[in-house]
Image 1 (spheres, rainbow, N blue to C red):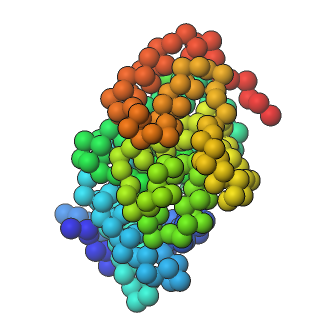
Image 2 (cartoon, rainbow, N blue to C red):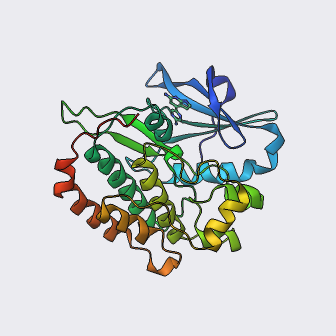
Length: 287
Ligand SMILES: Nc1cnc(-c2cc(N)nc3[nH]ccc23)cn1
């Protein structure tokens, strides 16, 4: 049910960097609609030939995302296979990955951050309703389609990218390196990804959004990361107690205690209307 795209219909542009086992290029796909030639901006994700055996997992991730459509889920046009090249063709999202956008130091307001968190919660709620586990929720996989302009009062708009190659295909080191986004229970059973795992990752992603895109536990080695879970540590809490509480609820070591998406959305709505937002309208840019 995933669309197969003819390699000849793809035009390759600049390299935009690397994903996990993939190279990312800007590009265009040609298609003919009502007798006219259309060039659509796309992202081409080419799987490194060394990881050919992961193609099936990448293909599954693409199929998953192309089966469902939602305004906050990245659109996957299809895949193209050309000799040893395996390519996923995705919609191009103008401002790219949220973690890089935040790291570039663009100063954004608390309500901007809450708006992003709520959009991600809505995407997760939609996936939960379809009983679909994403498995790789993180700021790197949030793409910014619209910056939002505080002076115009227009809010940002994000799209959740595909999960990429499943952790099931990865070695234990890659799973450990995904601490603190990967839920603790995944370390013991990587092939048992549940909806609750996405809630844990949601908590870590909200932490990133409110920490200017800085990676939590940045620079820690795999042993330190393993100890973080073995000692059941939590990420440094925000000064905003209600936000810290929501993150801690999502990052509960007991999956059964993590809140439902409905509860997450309700709590975000109450944060959005709280006085804290007015008091911290535009955070001073911390250099
Ligand atoms: N589905 C996607 C994925 N990545 C982008 C993107 C946009 C941009 N401005 N710079 C980038 N640099 C690397 C990737 C990227 C766009 N759309």
